[in-house]
Amino acid sequence: MKVTEHIKNAKGKTQVSFEVLPPLKGQNIKGIFDSIEPLMEFNPPFIDVTYHREEYEYKDAGNGLWEKRVVRKRPGTVGICSAIQNKFKVDAVPHILCGGFTKEDTENFLIDLDFLGIDNVVALRGDAVKNETYFKAEPKGNKYASELVAQISDLNNGIYLDPELENTSKTDFCIGVAGYPEKHMEAPNFDTDLKFLKQKIDNGAEYIVTQMFFDNTKFFEFVKRCREIGIDAPIIPGLKPLATLNQLNLLPHRFKVDLPDELVAEVLKAKDNAAIRQIGIDWCIQQSKELIQAGLPIIHYYSMGKADNIKKIIQSSL
Ligand code: FAD
Image (cartoon, rainbow, N blue to C red; front, side):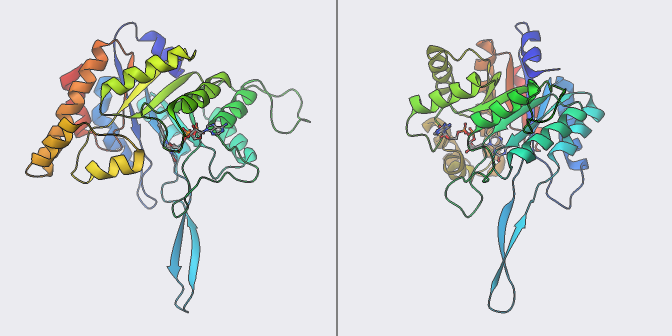
């Protein structure tokens, strides 16, 4: 079923969805299943699986030179989605990136998904490769998520890259995109970022999932501004509980999100990571309760393979 249909079916009740990441190469799928199993009691309408592009590693070649190697540390997004659908009978939503993909690669990726019966995707640009400052698209790839959305929409209309293909089959993907309540880090300002978000919707995206945020007023303001410029698509809030002291600096650095004073003060007073984890849980419960009260049909949790804190949050919020 499409994510948008799940949203329509919510009928005033808040549902919860999760986001997991593929295991590191060398690990098996059991870890993913173990992290999903305890959350199945909440009947998630769908589970997202992130996509991780290639990274460059430099290895000492032993002759005074460094050898550059291209590695993908977390492959398996498509396989995991298919396995989740089979095992848990729940819709799996793979993330698909512009980065590292030519348009041909994208088309073939989407054909695989279509054949596997996966009909939801989240279309993203992706970040710069580690060790590089700016994102670079493949020479024959999509540069922005809006272009990727347009390519997926084309395929939904039976338009493939090869104009000579005849009697083509139409795919039927429901397309989600990312939105940033605190603005995307590269956008020159909020209004410009929203204009590009609208472009993604105009090109065929049907819903938005937000970057994590720790202050609900930022989410509500974001939704208001989206509506003011004519973005009518459902906006799903994304929440991640803070869990370690390191994240106090890491989350703002990596995701360009602000942590509220009150949360920071509590974390700084905490005696150890167990206490910090509890503060993160309590904070996320308050956020969840407020979002549920506001009537949001779905809350998306960045569970990232850790079920215990997410379970506590949902048990105390729903
Ligand atoms: P875009 O929408 O393309 O925007 C990127 C930047 O370009 C923005 O600053 C925007 O304002 C600007 N822009 C857009 N269009 C134009 C234009 N036409 N001209 C000029 N500027 C423009 N990363 C992963 O690698 N794997 C994942 O699985 C993954 N999942 C994610 C899930 C969610 C819900 C979110 C919020 C992020 C996720 N990311 C993931 C991170 C994401 O790839 C990065 O945030 C990336 O930097 C931007 O992706 P985007 O799709 O928002 O890009």
